Amino acid sequence: MESPFMIPREDIEALEGSEGFRLLRNYLGAVEESSHAMNSFCTSHSTVSAEAQSIWLLHRDILHALVMPVVELFKRASTLAEAALCTKNTEDLELAFSGDARSAFLWLQCFLGEEEDWVRTRGCPACVTTETLSTESHVRLTVAASLLSTVEKDGHSTGLSLPPLPHIIPALRDALEADPFWGPECWPYLFSRATQLSGGIQALIASIIDLESLVSSPSLVRIHNREVAAKKGVKLRKSKLAKRQLWMKGEEMDLMRRCALQCWAQAAVPRQVRAEVLGLGKERRARSSTCP
Image 1 (cartoon, rainbow, N blue to C red):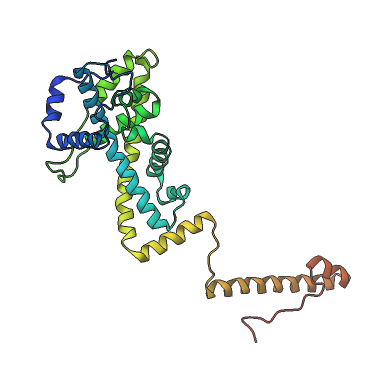
Image 2 (tube, rainbow, N blue to C red; image 1 turned 180 degrees about the vertical axis):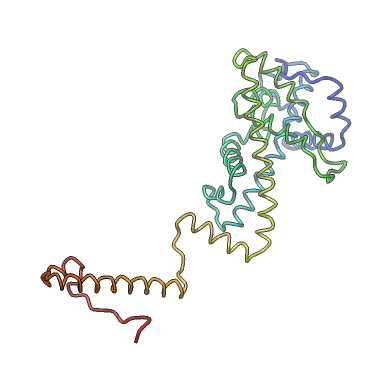
């Protein structure tokens, strides 16, 4: 009935001293009040003490501050991909990215679609917090989001921005080591996978910057769409030059046929056999595009 995360008191005081984090907590509390969910705890956790409930709410709010920026980042990436590819088909949006950015986009697309309630911290705060330990994917996203929160923002952060949140990593590591299912041997593997996901999300951020420039330029969008269509095998409209090249290619084949016929004529190959082999049954010679 207690939270599996043990965060030092000095770290909690530092978080509570952040104006951005306080505003987030006030917003989440106002949302619960407006939805008439003053006691949002489930029946299993509604009987715990008020102090325990306040700890559950704090840890839920930390998870929300970690994961929701990643959710908004994915929404932005999806919107830009739709604009760049001119499609609403979610299965095609990955084509707007490549490499690690594409892998991260696909992973987020799958996980966020399946765990929408958890990533938006809906429901009982205690259940949402304990669900963080339920699967490898939950742990991976939580650690990756914590690593991303510590990345330098190039001086664009303001007083209302959320502070770095690395506090969950040691707390999560200790919780996994004490968990009878996970154990201490799982942490190195999980942390390695989370680090890879964090790097992929950073690559996705860089791709988003490129897509924003692409979407703002209609001419670049058309070029990008032609490249994507070519990769997918979609038929494109042939230019006059391409049509002329195809005509000349056919004319070249006709010349080769005539050379073969002349050689076979000298070898006394019957005319009927020559026509059947070369497919010249009732075919008439077409007018040349290069000669009158």
